[in-house]
Length: 326
Length: 116
Picture 1 (cartoon, helix red, strand yellow):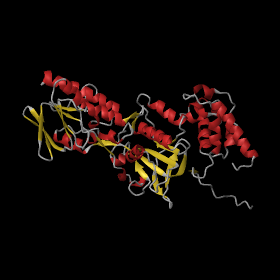
Picture 2 (picture 1 turned 180 degrees about the horizontal axis):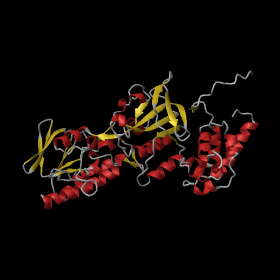
Picture 3 (picture 1 turned 120 degrees about the vertical axis):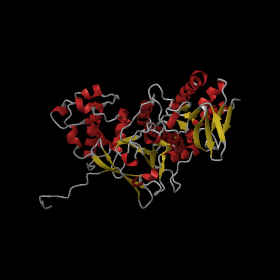
Picture 4 (picture 1 turned 135 degrees about the vertical axis):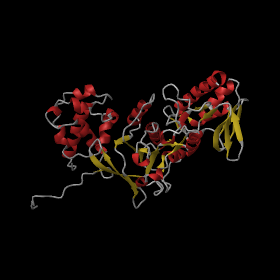
């Protein structure tokens, strides 16, 4: 959306093909964004307003299943056999979240009170955080790195945003249920962005969230449908047992189905099914295909702010290409 | 009771469902900087006492936080309250005061015959 707007302002006609019924991607599901707790709805509104530009043709609910170069043009073919063509194409196919039921030992899909971070965000947005029995949870645990840094799932990489997202969710939870005990289980805490570390500190200092270094190895329901966790507190050097009302799995970022499909067709499929750019340092929006550009999380896990910045960078590269390099 | 020369060992697991963490709540009410600890271990690394003993403030702190008081009193007595740990802490945790206060809280539990 961001890149389309910049290109439209430079007098180019842009066709924006959106898979969902509405634009906005994953932040549609968010209530607030980290680290500044900006309202996700406001941001979507701001981006949606930009879509009203007369040079932008927005087509929603459009599933592209073929992307190919046809002479001097690029063609994107939808599942309804509609063909959209252009001089350049920007792949911004985003990410999918990890399917937590693949980690069977964590009980997702088996026990009702084990949910993913995406589902928890939904509860936050509704303003109703309740267990499956309809009670207000008093003890909640968050588990980081579900489907990230895990060789068993094939994802050796770090998804980068879950640490800070976990802190954001834990704080939001404490704001809705101030007397709740909140635990965050982690392998490492990677607070790499601006104000991330400060937010982590605030979560400890102001909200009293307990961080335990250790990965939960098993989660199972007790007879009264609470969740019993087995972990080690690796800093204490002892195994640890804890029963909670709700367990939230911080699911990682994976390459999306569309990314895998379209990158595969154009021979730019890189590690873990993400799209590969020409080089991460100075040519990150370019690909081996002339006129095919990349932006955002189709390349790797990125935060929302990084994605917006990358969209801006990609639009400049496309302008360079259309004006001079083509 | 007859001493058989062996006994049933206690489970090593920290059970947060049954642990009494109220002392930690009292501690952080008095010394809120304890909440900021990120368990980096700088305190234990610089500790004068740890040169000669296996004393670790970080370890004592985390066990106290989890309500594991066994042997803790004796451990804390190894500290000479020199305060080097205060100087090196990157998060500004008032480590020396926390040690003194943990001692007082444990003493109080002892006086009130709360099982350690």
